[in-house]
Length: 156
Ligand SMILES: [Zn+2]
Image 1 (cartoon, rainbow, N blue to C red):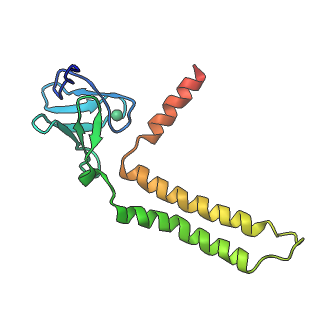
Image 2 (cartoon, rainbow, N blue to C red):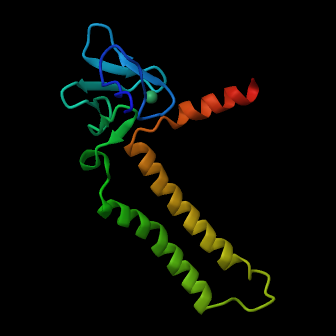
Image 3 (cartoon, helix red, strand yellow):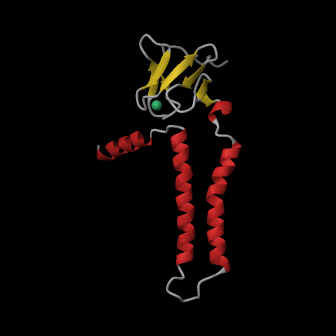
């Protein structure tokens, strides 16, 4: 038999489920964890073996499995409706622009024959960036911190 995993308690430090980089450990005199990297604060529920981020826009919750964190689908997920919306937001304009270029092709050999293709690519990239940005905002992902660390590492 395998050794039992250690449970969620105030004596251990755990990997941060948000940035997956720092460690969360208990704040002195409080029943809360804080990350030493992204600085998010989590309310601890020992009974449910779960933590809830309390300084974000939404109360994201993770359950401790004994080895790692498991996102609670009900509260963490944006929902498939949003997912579909996000995909449509990227696919539809790209398709429309691409279709336009396909249906009304520029004259072969004309100087701007490359434009529709580039324009289609730009449309896709711009909309994709929008969606990614919204996702990062939603999850309060510490992108700036990550970039900072990467930069420091490349200097060292
Ligand atoms: Zn963190």
